[in-house]
Length: 190
Image (cartoon, one colour):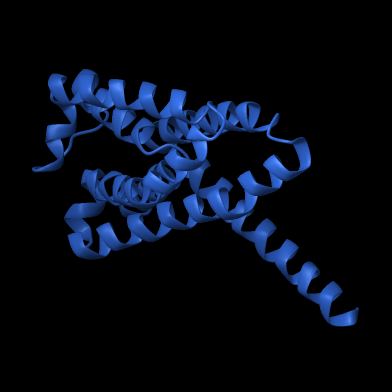
């Protein structure tokens, strides 16, 4: 059961990195630093709990949040984050000590990279362009704020109550598959 909870935690952290690269890393580092009985990081991931790294991550969170709220800059930010978010997801996935000890670190990094990269791809290639097109760009700031809130909540829940994140992830994937099948049925019958 501990391995399953570790996997749920790792998937939740890497998925939230697809929305905001630095929030899950800051949450993991802060929890490991201030509540070591709740989360213990193995080497080299224990560096995330270093106070200097936490300050750096805090600054990066602020920069990413601000850049994502400014028109035109948010598009440049999404291009830059196409590399950063999957890498952050890989680190967030692998930093979960329970997972790394039981799963090959390369596999853990690859899973985190794919999950965060997929979430970022959907956000940058589908959601944000649709929001920009339908609202003339006015909806980007509220959507960005919602993404930051969701990333924070999922990151915290991934560490504290990973079973909830696992259930939410399964429901979300089921919803996406259902939507996709309905969409492909409509296009085939048209």
